[in-house]
Image 1 (cartoon, one colour):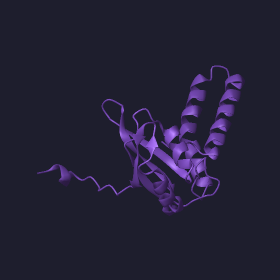
Image 2 (cartoon, rainbow, N blue to C red; image 1 turned 180 degrees about the vertical axis):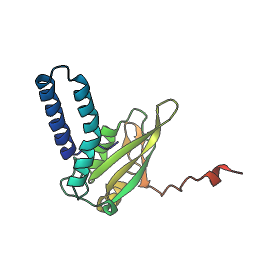
Image 3 (cartoon, rainbow, N blue to C red; image 1 turned 180 degrees about the horizontal axis):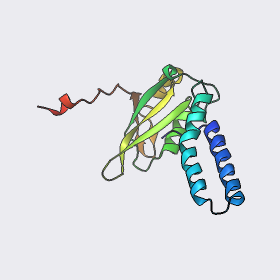
Image 4 (cartoon, rainbow, N blue to C red; image 1 turned 30 degrees about the vertical axis):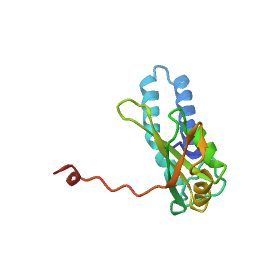
Length: 159
């Protein structure tokens, strides 16, 4: 899930202030306030999306990087106790990290021991060279560029 942009947060706060004022100005306005909050949940992201024509940058990045400048690393043999923050910190020492996704079992919710790190493409080789076959929380990491996942179709399930 993406974190909200600053514009989305500002718009949501404005709607919340309006709702707060309406509750004191109009007695018995709980339905009006609930409607305003419900509508603002849909309008705020739309207004913020139209207001920004440039892609949003990550909170750890100071420069705006387009989607084509971001590539994905596969990180295998991760410790099961590792979390997104610790992996982000590890990779941030070697370049600009855009996102970290650690895979979980959909039935148990437990980590599966691998994940993906999106980084600026010019930092990718440096991170692979620095972190592949190195120890992290008593496990030897396997780091390489992620392969494109083939699209799942109904045809794949037949046979």
